[in-house]
Length: 367
Image 1 (tube, rainbow, N blue to C red):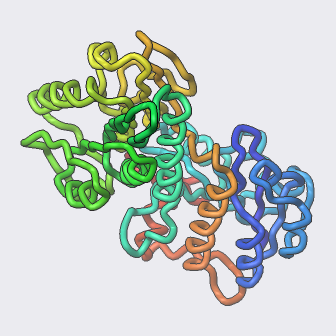
Image 2 (cartoon, helix red, strand yellow):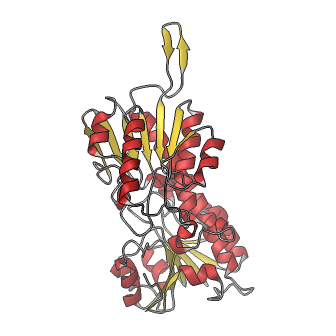
Image 3 (cartoon, one colour):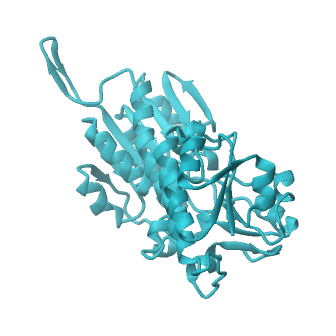
């Protein structure tokens, strides 16, 4: 079987890296890579060839691929270039927007949506969302440091002492925990808020203070996402966050609710109460943002507060992001590959059953 990877102009990452190409070939797959697909992630065509891949043009990749791996959904022209027997492996996010999944079904092919892989211990090595979220949390803090007109660490100099920056992290999932760890490494004083009580120990283990609002609904079946709260709780939540954010130099926003708009945690009133020069980095921007003023894919200034709306921070570290993505993919493919190098549709396996959203044009995903 042929596995194909194409160049994606809207992203610097690439779906497979040379080290993983070698591993896939050891499973008896043939690998086709579009010319220059890995260039912006700093993987050359020569490296892919040395790993055993064939370098070719996009048309040949699409027409020959039995399995096509991408970071983003395909357009219609690309979808209809694939074999009817082809399997597309990508991130379709059907729980947020069903349109891309419907286009795949109309094209008559099959599709695995990587964001639908259950977030369980067994599937941990295939969890693309967690891999990318970890990078995003790290990069969010570095982005904040870039815009902040102040130091992160406490410094004692001949000219006097500089107090440490105060960082507030909203949401203590994978991205939030990485943001906490990174801000602590840079010497900041860190606080974190999350509705999930289970986050307390993780936050405190990283040396941050846990900000808690009593009475939160907690759903352990939500796959690591927050769940919607009552209006009364949200009111108390906004008041407490207002108190802490107004004293912070940096706020990192990571809270999201699966399939719904991100919760508003920072109101305009709160932003206007923050210190001049403060920075908000909102990585929930693509689903509306945790900050009321966030604009997706934009950096704006409101009353001397910089607001960065960017949900694609992982693509700004394309080399390691590509490596982690590719390793996740290998672990997924290895589980469903037989000894002859064929992909096996084992729907008794909960991982494939959850993530296979289209089979030969039939919609399997039900919202």
